[in-house]
Image 1 (cartoon, rainbow, N blue to C red):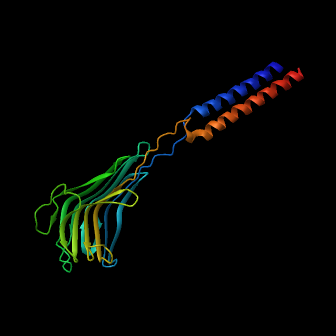
Image 2: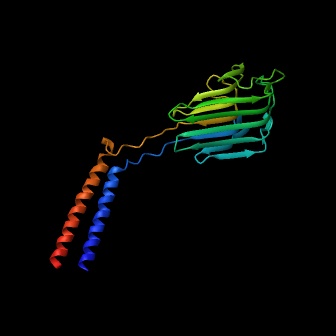
Length: 258
């Protein structure tokens, strides 16, 4: 019985000591890397809410996924066909991607703003980000026309001004800007009616296809014996010392009983 007790105490001491050593040898847990993305198909707010369509549909990573609507009625502005928002990513590697897509867009001309009709088969905004690099994005347009004009380039350069009738109206293609948090927003088609210089007090704001990516981060594991892991190492040493005293005391008591 005494031999069994001694073996049990020794086994417990071995397990505690091994656990402490493993604790010291293991790297400190790192914070989970961040990966973020969002997207929507269409949004519109004209004449102080006379036509008000919030970002529709939306998708956000995490968790990510695809949301689709067969059509969206923009009232006096016109309508669009299928709209889709997709986001995806991998938090372990700090990657993310987003896409805002609109099909069969048909915006009616707005006479007061001298804004011609805008039509397109497909309007698509995409972005991606792989930490630590900065996010990137682009716009893809298929058969986009302003009024009876020529078809616009398939991949317009960033912040291409298609129409500028300041202060009445402005149409920007592949609008790209960096947000305060470091994320990148890509608006495939952005129509502003009134106050086009700063959007303050504007009477109309329409976005077709929007995607935002980032900021993504990757945090490397902390080396077990670096300065940052010192508290873990000290805790492991203290655990080993405590286990040693416990084993010694237990063995003495068993010897005394014997």
